[in-house]
Length: 369
Image 1 (cartoon, rainbow, N blue to C red):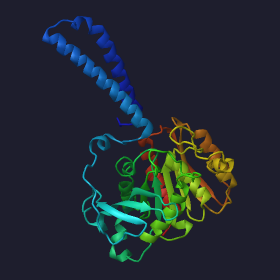
Image 2 (image 1 turned 30 degrees about the vertical axis):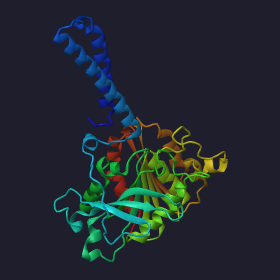
Image 3 (image 1 turned 120 degrees about the vertical axis):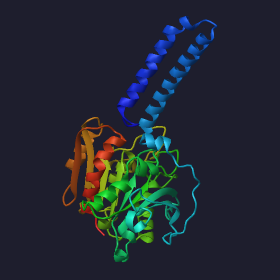
């Protein structure tokens, strides 16, 4: 049972209720001064408190996706990052550290590829954000030294962490296995979280007088990728992928910037920016800006240019099914739209892990080197 599953949360709630009831029921019987009574009272109180905090923690994690798995929860890296010069850093992307993929021979980049921990600075937006870049093995192989590669930006949900895309959703390992099996072309993955002004949820919007988040993801980030790595500068060279908030950003920005992104995939995306305490006032009364942030309005107004879209939902368990079907109907040729609709699946890591392998194959067929 996964850390974000409904079953685990339900069991924690049931355990809390039962232990609370047991505390009330047995308390009179444990009211004596003997050591057994004292230990009994202490044990009941501790067990009830532990179950309560576990239920609250699981509910918060399910809502905000701080950790994607049990291994993610208990196996966090604590070592301090170090600056490493790999000969690939640019003014916009500074490489902070490197990691190997856990595959046989993975210590050699030409065998296992390489995961780079980076700091990315937007020249236009003046925003700096941490992230990770996955370079496939072929990137380092001598026979491909002059070859360009397709690249996809990948955003997690809010608040999320970029590391969850590696440990929780297994993007590099999935891409490695899919390419090795011949199901997809080798692809560079640039993995970030959408939260570039923490703790505020800026929803990939250029906020009047505030963070220029859309500019960072739509203009600064693609330019930084192209200036640092062997990636072409045409729309067919770059895709945009995301889950939840990241999926909303991917679909919206691809609709706004067809000259930059040839394809976009929104996993469990929603289609309108929320208005809540985490976002604050995103639009400052500007109705045009608010309409621009609506994905359905954006795709309706988009001039068809051949952009490819993929959207995902579930018949049971996903609240975005109705809007996803509306999105599909609004896409006009020569733009193309595809979908993955599961029979059932919640808004969680387990669902996205079922969608990522076919989505990467789809993306590989829509963008090229």
